[in-house]
Image 1 (tube, rainbow, N blue to C red):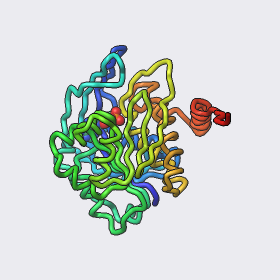
Image 2 (image 1 turned 90 degrees about the vertical axis):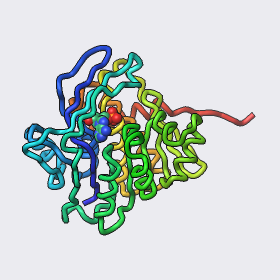
Image 3 (image 1 turned 90 degrees about the horizontal axis):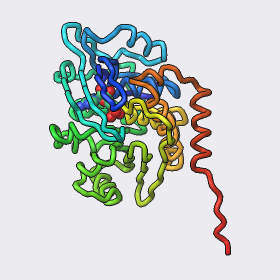
Image 4 (image 1 turned 135 degrees about the horizontal axis):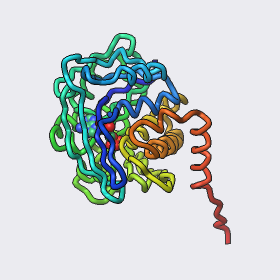
Length: 307
Ligand code: AMP
């Protein structure tokens, strides 16, 4: 099987300046699975409590997401995260992080998940991400890792160990600055790549994303949208589109990674249009192709440098 995903599956409570959600289904691996399953089958590793809705698990199974690696702790509660967005809808405050089942999570990679070619380490405790890498008998063709400032604050040493083992790191601009201690994103990229990953993607919310490799850099814009409803999960959805495209095409060249970050940006633009995973559940291949076409129009221009 080609794509292995590990990350949180959760309940979220979201507040934006324009509305508030009840406790809804979220989690990094949930968004990644909804998104990446448009491109490839997914083998999921996570943990949920007995309170996690069975319908959600069934809906993922129907999307060709294998849940053999998802542990269900019947007597415990699922991970819970609450956040409030600022007026710019780009920055947010975390109001609550209740680890619950995640606090004692020991992932087990099922035998049927071995030999995966692509590994997506979604946002989760770095020690758990490391344990998944170590359980794999064969190194995947590409390991992509996401993380967040929360783990930089509570588990920096573990985080540095995982960084040494991954090929691509995805962070947002403030996380890149925190991890490197440098305000310049170009210098930050250099020091982060020196920590392990050969490729670095820095997400800048509505201002797009940068892909760094060696001394090269590529920029993908975010689609200018009239309305952003809920940015939660946009980063995970971006990751799902990025690795989903690479897993589908099995091409890990820098050129194809450029396309992959456009695919990631296109998928993220759907995610923010409704609360939670709602929009991702609705879209089909036609919607995705049309959106990708909009990106082509967005960045396509001619220039005559002669004379
Ligand atoms: P994003 O908006 O892409 O950064 O991702 C938001 C998702 O990450 C939410 O659905 C949360 O459930 C999940 N999340 C938030 N904090 C954590 C954490 N410390 N560990 C794992 N997942 C988290």
